[in-house]
Image (cartoon, rainbow, N blue to C red; front, side, top):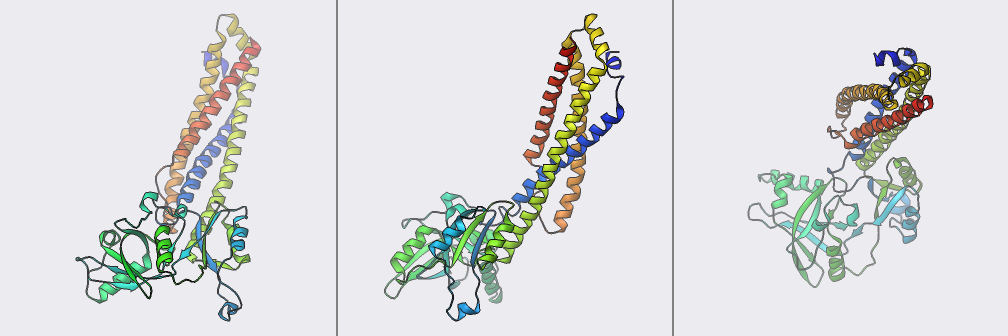
Length: 391
């Protein structure tokens, strides 16, 4: 009887509009947060290089061939790139100034040997545990990251020689060694493969090993920086591309495609997220306003109930439960629609070759809890204020 008395004078149209607005806002809110996180995670764990990271070098031109332009970077050029607001970090890629070869040294596999080119980058750019990327002269082996193209070359050689090919996991267990030398001396060092990358064309080694090799076996020439590794801010990849075009820089196409994809899709979902937040706020305000209007319309009934002995808190709780139940139903329905969208969008991404994780994100669930909590607190305070104004 109390519910019938308090909620009989309702404007159903206004309530319906507020519910539809809240439902759309909640649905797009959880969807945009979920896919914004998933798109930013795309590519992580599949490559050694961390997210939003590129290895760049200067483009080769006719002037370069004729010796009129340089392909190495000066300290001033690196400082200019670092000062750009959309660049987080810039570090040089150090190359070897000494002779080095790689070969298998395991009784279980045939011997394979090749002269190689090694480089090192700052550990902060590598998606690998720091304790797995250190080296000391007394260590048992040198950890190394191998280009996947090199593994393909090895397997091609083995296949042509009638030797069984090796998988990623198998080759990590095979004993290998480096040979470093100059005209006067030679040294061997055991090495072990700890990861693979499609983004770097050379073998990566710890900087301690690179420093040791250059100091002890270097050819004495000055170290030239022909490649740099840069980390850009999320959703600002377009600015990184403009900088590269302006300065005549280039990177591997695969890195550019992934960075461009993440930037475009991430920006799209960020815009949808902003619109969703605005929609949820506005529809929530409409519901709160509707609550206040309902209390005003029922001012006579509220005062009468309090005069015959109803405590104000009991009436407040009735309004509070009524509107929180409405918003809880909106959130449940919005989450159900999100599950339908997720099923469709996951299939769309997979069909397009974007293999994102299909699990749920914590922040999408947290956003629903936060939205409900804010609305519940606001509705209670609004109901309390409206009822005590009539008390």
